[in-house]
Figure: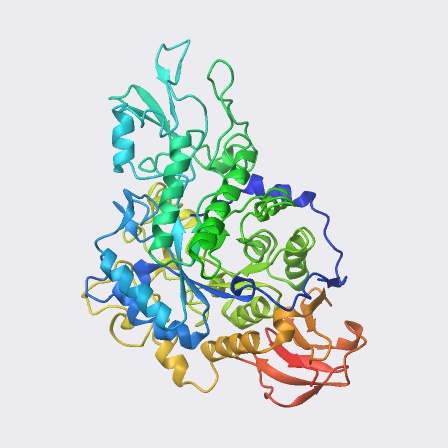
Length: 591
């Protein structure tokens, strides 16, 4: 669920950024013993598009189970599954009608247990999407709340609305806008009140000021922990709470932001009263306590809590916890997405994205790096196919955990989805002229396993979304057989991360050497240092890496190269006179 608005991101400008060419040292990365999640390779699976086992054109749990060996071979530590719970599928699983059951088109609870069993045999961890902000309007909780049944009267955010003094007609309580365009309030005739929905009208917001709701959602967490999951990725956190109403029971209106003239777009208004409330931070601390208590009682490995938030740094960093309480293990770091969306891909913007996290992250916490997800255009389409290896290298060489969205290891690009084939509610709520600005369907096309029928995703006559056009060359089978491919580069990077203590525990130094060339060094006493360097420009350039780090030896040995690089692994290259072609990226070693 995407939670980024332009007026929210603008707050990031308050953070002081390092100037171009300044190097940064991560002095916290010196601990030798780390928990499993601190250096993990997380892999996001969008179940509907990963693998179809029964020929209906829709991915499912048995399809995922059949491909777990692929994840193991890839070097994945944990797979995060986008929602698999029972749902009318208005927002493709993010509108949940039963938090305790599996969506039938994905399989059964027994299928899920079989998936967990197979994953455990392969030493893979499974993480579920936890969608706490809202339910489906087909959820029994909402149906009972509409009827004001005892215990459910205030399960959702209800309001009488206002009466227009001029027309005498009833109107929504505020001017608040939903993410999917239009008013965030919906009138229910039976109850004679409005309910709040920050997403689609079929996704009513739960009321976290009701202790019964808080307790219920903690039961959801414990239920799936009992089923063997290794943690949760928490969806849509910024709007979890809205500001409290005043003494008259009224909420304040948001003001016009100036970001857009489209009055239906959420960015038309500020989000001061409907996002990033302090109670949201405390709720995450409570969920962490649920996970820690479960481990204390039942033993086993740590269960991880991952947080989706596109909030400004001052708010996001609070999710980690404070001196007295732990919060999320990893609030997701989307800077490598958002900074480039604002300003484009360049070495200076890569440095800016890294600075924003490492210079604001509390001491003793773990960084993480995300290239893409099901809500954003694919990394190879956003940054350019020529830079996908460079970006995969970057997230693997930086300290902390990495997060890969399915297909990034292949260099998959966006599919071309017509208005007629569009199914994403964000796109469908617009019109044929502007839908491409909003639709998330292009990043959700079926995974490309082979160059055969339906890219090996399904034996059905039709897939739920059309395939991306490049599946005949960009797929697992073809890239596995090719001598040098995006997939093989990715696997080499994961192997380095898993085997080298320098990448697990080493210090970090980085700099934008020029506007186009970025360099990163990981070093650990007693071990070889690793150097990543990438040319994000459109022209060849010769650089002197000693200007970046005077301690580097005269020659560096090449370990991994980007797809179009003409250099050779195992060969030494001069540190003072390193030629980088346009788009070229390298990982080198001092030994």
